[in-house]
Structures are given as structure tokens and as C-alpha cells.
Image (cartoon, rainbow, N blue to C red; front, side):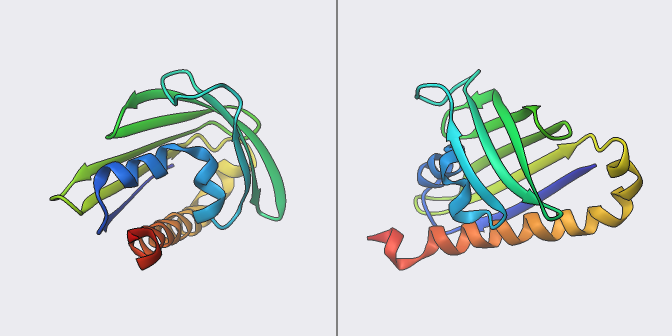
Length: 148
């Protein structure tokens, strides 16, 4: 299953990308995210790893991720390594003037077993959830408190 979500944000691209690439921000804008923490020292780059706990279908899911592609200021790809079904998330930010950008997320998962059977039912839910979290991101990034 592959899902793509895009949103325009009225904030400088560098600020939005810095927020998106730091997994420790995920619980602030992703509702079902319980925690995220880097398990390797910074700076964030190729091979960096983090662990997260998210809530999915009423259960806590512990997953480890690794950064598999990193273009500072523009693109980051993370892939699950252990914990959940295989998932790859690519987040990118494209500058649109001095104080605006276009953010995009491509999420691709290999739903096997039960999840493959449930995929036709789950896909609309996943799309809605990712769109909602990017609306959250837009609202947070554009809030007057952030502009200060």
C-alpha cells in the first residue's frame, strides 16, 4: 500500500524540514504517537536510528527505524527495521518563496498476513489519518506562536 499526502505551509522550508526530520517531534503533531527517541547521537544523517511507540488499532506498537536516505534541508527517508510490518516513509520539503514551502509524505507499507486481507478496508483510514496529521503540522507550523 502506498499513500502520498501533500500540503503547502506558510513557513520557511528550512524550519519545516528541521521539524519533520527530527523524529522526537513526532508525538507533538502525530496524534497516535506515544514517544520517539533517537538511539544514536546527532546530527541526523544516513544510518541514524530511532525507536518509537505508537498506538494502532488499540495496541501499542514498538518500532525501530533507520534513516536510509538523507538530503539535508530537503528529504529524509526512514525504514522500519523491527517491530511492525515493513514500512518506508519519505518526507520532503520544497521551497516556495522566502516564507513558504510544499511538504510531501510518501508512505509505503508491506502489509502481510492479516493486514494484507484488511488492506482494502484500512487504506481509506490510513489516507485520512496521514492527511489529518499533515493538517496538524500545517496548523502548528503556521501558528503565530511559532512566528515569534
